Length: 191
Image 1 (cartoon, rainbow, N blue to C red):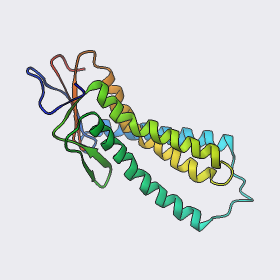
Image 2 (cartoon, rainbow, N blue to C red):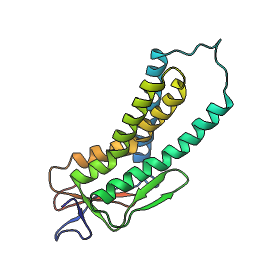
Image 3 (tube, one colour):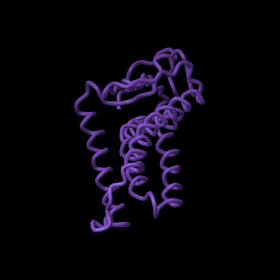
Image 4 (spheres, rainbow, N blue to C red):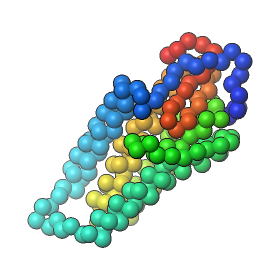
């Protein structure tokens, strides 16, 4: 079953992640995000270097890029929520902590396979979307789209990290993601 509302008998908490309280995990995820951001911008610069003599600040494009960034953040979380619903989630809630936007459900437990797809859905969908836009509009909106693409990929660092942790379990596990924390449940040992 991709989603349960009650855990099977004998299942207990194996691991909990909370980026608000767990400083080690916060450093890992944010370190990964910063590393991805720097690497991807370096690659973008190698592909198309800035020509400092030709740079002009286009206020309208800059404002539209900022609006697109905010819209993207909402769509990223909606993508998680739609994936949760697709895999049987009953009550998806959305929020913003001041540090992170989130989608989550405190009533649903997702199988490892379903949860990995839920976690990675925005990464796959929006990376493909921005890649297509970059191919189609690379001459006119290159740096705006690069900003959105790099923000997308680096912003998925937490999703990638949690998907990696869930994938390491060899046994059947279930994952509850409230949006504020992720808890892994199983019968066996803690990874």
